[in-house]
Length: 425
RNA sequence: GGAGAGAUGGCCGAGUGGUCGAAGGCGCAUGAUUGGAAAUCAUGUAUACGGUAACCCCGUAUCGAGGGUUCGAAUCCCUCUCUCUCCGCCA
Image (cartoon, rainbow, N blue to C red):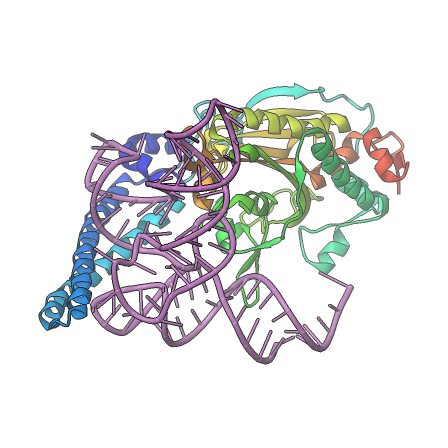
């Protein structure tokens, strides 16, 4: 959520910033609601004050044994005027809330202009793609040839966009997850957390998936409204909801492995081959909660932690600064890491690292006590994949492929594979 | 799933219709005392929103959440959520 005060004080600046995303803010509507809210709130509060004063007087008169009938008459009319305005104020307020909850975050100044991913800016590369000198099967072909990746079985079980992994490939995914968790915990200073995969509406509003993006989520039928998490960012970031965090505890760095569930509504026909885009996938997620002054540096650090995973695995990648039009709802600035996939002859997103500044914190009411002011102030939150296990698996299959069709296990994963160095079937 | 108890400020804990934003204690902050500290004493110590340019001041709201009754609700009624105890079931 944006700071309502900023919207009040400098609406044009907000509108212009959001325009860089291709989002058009209707300032007229905003002003109509806001003006009426202000007037109504002043009136309601004055009426309540009048009522409270009289009610108190009634209590005192009663205590003295005086006749309270005249006072009761006086307060009667107040009540009616009050309740009609209260009803109206509620309507206006919920209209404003709805509008406010639907506004994306402001973009950082350094975010490049542009309307879609073609305008994203490449910041750096690690290891140029090399020509393997033999035809590399893409992961889907390799998977069906080896029988280790079974889309047909998955579709019988669940439908499209699910995968069954077999044998050493299933183990390789587990190895990847273990390796990534260990790396972030032991070398990057993250605390491992295990969190629920089903969350309520408030939690999803806190991180910004709701109310706007309900179509992307799986809702679970049952007595209570629950949703499958689309990313661990949701439960992990919400750990600080309604908290006032001691300054000594900051920065908080959490790492969690969870499955992620996405309905992928609106992406019909895209990436239907293989396991690039699934309804269910595994991911290791990094979340940081930091003091506002430190969030820009924290984004660089968090991104480098995700990069370290790919470097240890020996996978070529590049880092992209997303342009305004490609930056997600809650993010002020996002850096994507794209891994090279020889089977597709292109880079594909494997991690997305975002600084959400105080956008999620305001929705969640996540604060810290600033020793300089002595007052609770909003924290900044960041998140990033470190990294998506399913896509890392694809990258290993395609980058580690040998001329004979086997796949070389990255050396750092060999211990996690019980010493297995080559996967062939 | 069955039976019962409960949810109050950073924490503990009073409060069953009328200056209750809420006694008291702990903790914390500042000051006094001290060579310094402990102890003691004094004062202060929630958040949000609005009136405002303002962390002074004034108002409104907040005692798990949402409704209701009432001139007036932490206190009464309804619904929901959560926690605890016992029984059952279960990985």
